[in-house]
Image (cartoon, rainbow, N blue to C red; front, side, top):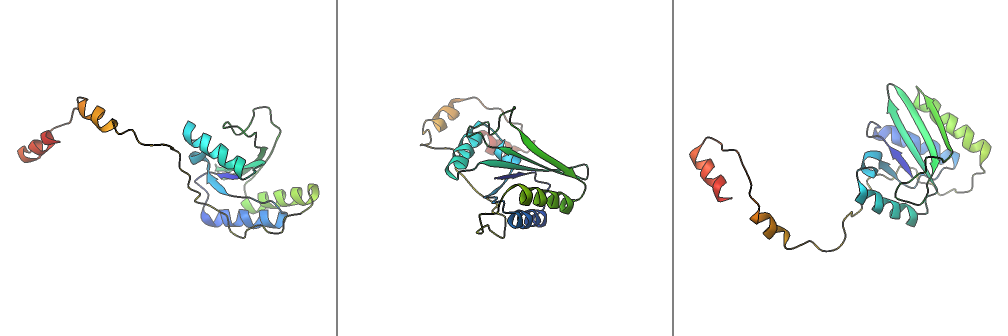
Length: 165
């Protein structure tokens, strides 16, 4: 699973996928890291999603200060995603191509390519439902009983319509 910063363009993600495909790295899906770390409900749902997709490693792509960085670490099958004490592999380079070449050389030298059905394009846009169950029908009633405060517009017709809400 690849977790990338929103600063990556679609072209850069396609280039990343091309190098991963050549190296035999099966990046199942690409997710925005802010989406993954946006709260307890998303982390719970995404952790279960990672388990069902049998994700073993997380690949973090970062880009800041004209530097590209990749971190590869093991997924720990919990909603925390990784342990602080996990061993990780990290590389940084000013050029994305050079960084990906380093990853390619490392993957080719340390692992035998066994998956030849890796997608040509990065799978992005995975949408998951974070909320299960039914909506609480009493919420509207509870909300209606709460006192609300709104600023007046200074226009009598608009202020009258505001009071009716």
